[in-house]
Image (cartoon, rainbow, N blue to C red; front, side, top):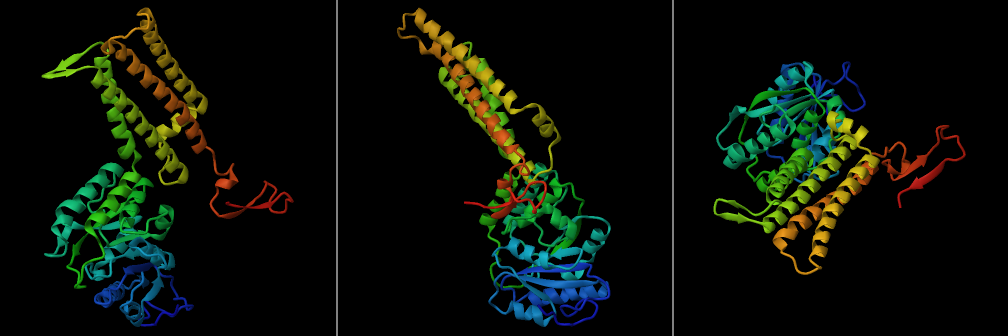
Length: 431
């Protein structure tokens, strides 16, 4: 796609390389931003000229119908068409078309001042992998951010992100940020919507990248229409993504809490009814406690499954404790542990049956017998869950290198170690 040669300092026609390579690519996602796009491009060009940057401006268009593309081309920006709809899709399309080693991203609604991008470039030059603007350390102009976003949405989601992922940033969702190309390639970003901003920060934190902040000013956007952001829908998408990428907080910690509560309550009630203030607790509470044990254990197992899968797929870095445990807790070990739990449950259940036999199989007092039956059933269920969980973990542990059918493309070549010349090569496809 041809690019107009507006200023030799920052733009050149397609196919004609500048004597020096592009250092900075400024990417603006765009969807019907004709009212503000020109101002954003001109501010970016001003920064490029003022700081003598070897840079380009890319407008990643996501289906505009208001002439935004023509405005961008007229000002010498490169226009990249994002085929898939969504904020994240537009940014990814722009980054993948960029020529620079450093990429600065900002919304095209004139809420961010592109003439002030140089601090981002400085920090990228200094070795930072991801630099995020912080509107709360800078300035938020009156009317630039709804109070629900300023005092509830952004602070709460940022706090959750800091706790879940131990990322020391004060504004997870600022739309003005910069990153290195090699960092982008290592992130493996996948989302298409507004949660793309969270994914970028979370994956940078999980992969141990160097993060930095720049205080910025958030201006009131100049579009004169409602923003593309939808408060509740997009807020939930950010929160959902954080939960999905944190099995510890989604599964393990709630599961451990339920399991501990159930276990302690069961141990307390197994010897007889108890009173807690005005409450009388008996076998009904014991039954609920047994259910909490099962539910908590299942959540913990789900958390382990999720973490192992995320590590295998490269979403999460290896966890040192879990990696070490996986070397010792094999299928056989897990099956033996499950079998031991089942045998324990059968022994307790046998004791209950013996008590019943001693009473000539007549009706028994459930307040006594259920104190044996409930723990027995819980132990049996835990044993069965442990055995099948061990089998499932073993399936997750199968390496894709040893199983070509697990490798990505729909059509792939299966080869032996001798290479493609081997006559045993066959074509395989999913079906």
